Length: 549
Image 1 (spheres, helix red, strand yellow):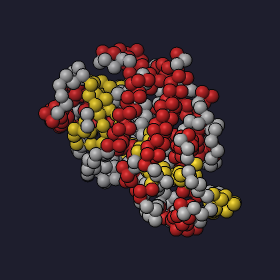
Image 2 (cartoon, rainbow, N blue to C red):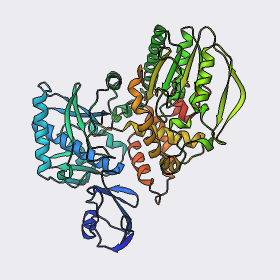
Image 3 (spheres, rainbow, N blue to C red):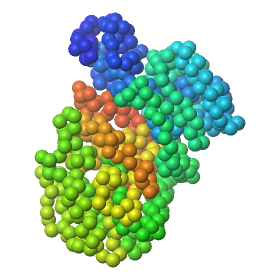
Image 4 (cartoon, rainbow, N blue to C red):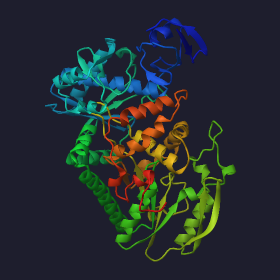
């Protein structure tokens, strides 16, 4: 049986059932960092996978998104086993990303979570790592797996597996503890070479190596505004009885999801009303709304404008995207592609001139950027400020002081919006919020820009790099953070995303990412978009909005 090794650009003959680990040893394959897994026919697999047919193998290390994910999931299991061993009655909840790590809380600890407890847990983790215990993957019959989870007190959470409709389920075993992770793990615990565990707010912060600088741990910083959003989401989820996907599925089956949708939308609308009141109290003349790709900036701008109108303002909406430089003047990234996420892609001189003239009471003409031709068009779109007018501006750079450098700071009210939270599969399997934004973007690009899922996936890493450089460093500059995530949204997006993702060919490298997204979307029962209000954030991506874009 022949396999292609992409890292060596070489074809070799191997025995049936050999593992990628054995192939790597036999061929002496080396990467800059330890090999953590392999893409086999563009699907992510662990190093213990049994190769049973001709294939193409590409090994990866921690600098790959797939390798980093495997490393982090394996750390989750080590932390879970440590707490399970030390405090059998306690429950670990792995929640959200913050400050270069994963924020976790422990329920039923029966003692204060202090430095002493932290050190005890960390000592146990180090002991497990030093013991070089294997992560053993097993395929077990569905009912047997459910019985195992029931015996460990996780039966309710694991009812999510009913959605997969599979006869056998994959589970992982670490010594005497069993759990499920929707992704591969490392061969053994000794592959973990760097991590940190710290006290953070009311829980723990599990710090992991930086993917681009894997020999370093990011410095911990306090993010009080982001943490406040997380606590609000936790409060809302508990109040609505939807902590995990299986809770949402139960409401869909029982016919209660309509009330959930209306309540969730009303909670968001209430927050926008409170923001409008605060803007009025500050007597701001300009609102700046920033956020990463597919965060819902445009709809946020319009929903806030409605609330400002309610309290007597005349909102004047402006999109920074209409002030892009002409295509030939747009800066390029290291790969030679146009870098639309760079501040240099914006015509700052024209933008600031326009704002200052508006604030001075002059009538101005706004450009409309044509993304097909890459040029600004002047269509006679003229506006002027009235006595009760307020500028509402949205764009990815709105929190960067350089964007509005000529405008006095005291006139500005700054808002950061993003999909900051997501329902988890269960207490051990959080869904990255970047996945929510990626799925939103895949659907929007397909519906409105003529891009396939493959096109969007190819661009996504460049988009993410731009966000890391141009958006996230300024998020704490915001006066308020707004979470555009909706508890129910992935159930609505599933029917849209599935066929688009299934069109990604297996021979493309992006196939692995498409399969990863499909796998967790399967956990959600679908919700018809007929139930979604016309002013919902989701309408920006699936269509049918009451707002004009």
